[in-house]
Amino acid sequence: MRIVTTTGVLPGQIGVPAILDRLKKCGFTDLDMSFYSKEIWNDLDFRSDRYEEWAYGVREEADKRGMRYYQGHSLVDVTFPKPKEEEKTFRCASILGIKYLVMHPHVNDWDKEKPGDQPYSHPFSREEFIELNTERYKRLMDLAEKHNLIILTENLLWGDGAKPTVMSELVEEVNSSRFGWCLDTGHAINLGIPLETVLECKHPPLSLHTHDCRGFQKEDHLIPGDGCIDWKKFMRLLKQIGYTGELVLEADHQPVAAPDHEKDAVIRRLYERAKELVTYYETL
Image 1 (cartoon, rainbow, N blue to C red):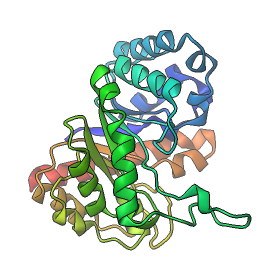
Image 2: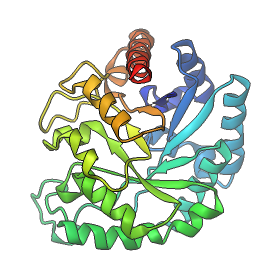
Image 3: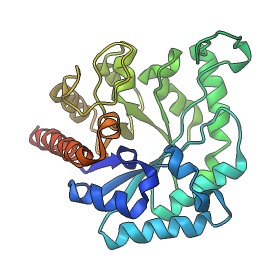
Image 4: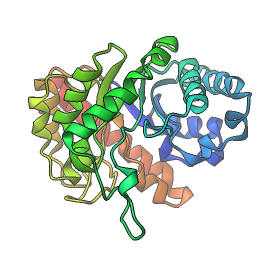
């Protein structure tokens, strides 16, 4: 099992070469490109018509360091169609050699929002979530085919869109080899959903967003082992469902919060903790 980290553990403004050098020094060679990083999204070359040149440059920097992008996290979700930004993100992901591109589902009825509402205060019902997201993801399947990508939806923090079983049902409805789902460990626990519910899913996750949390309604994105999740139990669950993908880490809050001179030590600890989990998994 390969260990993959989001590039979002380091600030995008330091530049791709610096991010790659520091991650490799900390042990990582396999990456999840965080297009979700505002710094990446606002990069002048990425936002311009030179975005392909930008992506080839990023790929070259990774290749010469012996590093690889396995997954990406799109800033564009499926709430509203954005053809130009979708094409740009998919094309860049393809150039980087990414297999899975995570795109957040549409979780909330925006039309119901009123002044004073909390964000996402009107989550869809199960039926609404499945119906709306089936249509929105199906629209992107030709684009995924064009760029040789598999789109992954993700269990989020609101309504039925938080449930792994609903993710599996959505995969069934979209019914495409270009579509699957990503299990976010922290999001499930945040909503009080036991990770064991993955055993009830007809379609198991194709990838992961692995991070820890302190408990119910605490989205901490902690290093595994720094929160409340029983990680050995989770690795046994992955073995039980026959998971063969990567251990993709989205434990970015601690390195982001650390002063720059402490970030590398935090990231090294993240890598060592991930190695322990993979070693345990491989002995099962």
